[in-house]
Image (cartoon, rainbow, N blue to C red; front, side, top):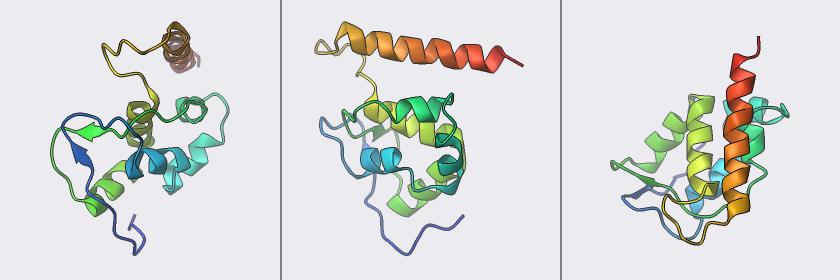
Length: 119
């Protein structure tokens, strides 16, 4: 898969940024062909994640340039889900996280676990 002829900003390294940025919005809009096929299926994790509001720009552990990161994210549905969950999920130890948000993500996790076990 080749990225379009657009240049992409380098992802944030280290701590997540407080406001959603380019990569959070990209995860939600899902421009990757692999993710577009999956997000239409109602009982997938990707579909459920796309109903949650964006909360922050995810931070990476290592520096990647934007084009390489775009390609890496788009190669697997799990990569798209990982980017999106970091953009919508509550931060660990965030005192502003509400109980309803924690229940939402716990229910999503339980539903995904059950769907993986169902033949």
